[in-house]
Length: 337
Image (cartoon, rainbow, N blue to C red; front, side, top):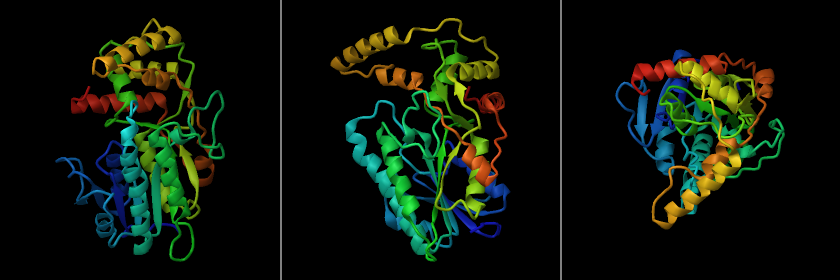
């Protein structure tokens, strides 16, 4: 199925999150009619076009069913995102949002005769790469509630069939997405470097896989339109594997700051972090730095995205330098940096 008729209507769940606005903007530019579904109303000025918005929770099937009326395809972004120091009592909520919410979206889409569901997943489902470069054929080894529930949601999407028996869904496993509305680890790293309050941990040779938000938006259009995308999993990356040292260099260049001169040794830092974390916990506080943060920073996560390029004709337009320069410029313009 090729969705090339610009009179078609697209539902975007979780559209007010960090990745949603550039995806919506790309769809609008391509001429599609857009309806969004999010838990909270979009802030004023988020959309530059006339977007139909609906507020509600994907955990409520009736809400999703109503949002699906008259819809031809779905971009499903809504999710409970990764929390580094997640509590075990959050597991039910991860299940309800990431698995149950996805099941609601898929079932409502199937019943409404929707032609395509594009699901945003994550390369976190692979776990660490431990020196390898992982592909879509690599066995998933999710090591967090976020990744585990995303993998479970993938299976729901891939098992779904349209009324004609053909696959309904496409899964996009995104590299670490960054852009002007960046959140999480890379936001903290960028702000720390901007304030001159960051020292790298380790030699910086561990690898990471990133993708700029604009390229995610372009990739989404391909997954939506291409007739051969249904029933498939694709890694979406900027086409490169970067060392942490490369990333810090690109960030500092974009900020116009000198790179940190000293790097802290991993072992002693992790040991000291553990002591601080344990002391804080015993006193009823939460430590600002934890073992999990150190482990995440030094993790090796190298993922190949060439299948999406070969099969879907995806060509990333932003390398690490260009992506971070645009990110920093837009954040400064918005007063966020």
